[in-house]
Image (cartoon, rainbow, N blue to C red):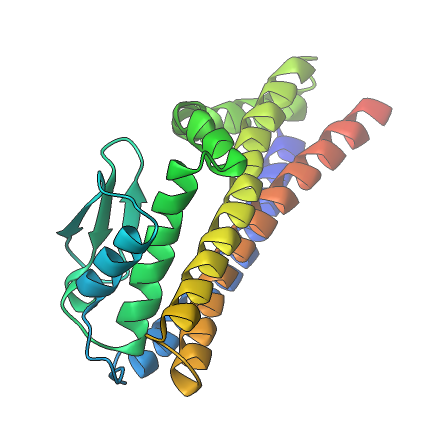
Length: 237
């Protein structure tokens, strides 16, 4: 039992460290959002108008643009075909508004063109939702079983599998987000809506957002590697 408790403490320490890194990336994003959210673009277009123009440019007419709630809660819903923009982005005419709106439309374009990584990530959503609900309980049972030497090593294998699903989803998210950013920035530049310093600001803001996904992916991978090492070390004893 002592060994099981120690494993849990180590797991919690690693989780705490990864959470701290994630919080640092999130704080950096908040600061960038505050900076670029207060710099208006010369075109004067709101985020909603930028999104609409980009959709029209790519000939996408079945995607709606709605105002959501909160801040930095912007997203694209592929099931409903809706680009949801938070109030400061939807009605704002800042560098941040243009950048975020173009990024989210980038996801709509991915959906329209059957971008492979978006399709794979979408297929994983129900599996990840199920895994997230039970993985902590399974892991606790695995640590207890290993601490008591009950020989129930299969429980740890199940836990590794559940965390591996989360890690895979996080890794799938990276190309999806980076590609949406690329599409958004290219269009902002080509359309003339954000060029020069405005373009560089949009790029900087979206880069900060991307780093939060990188931190999440690294955190998920570290957890999986740790669990595999713990399982392997127990097996050698």
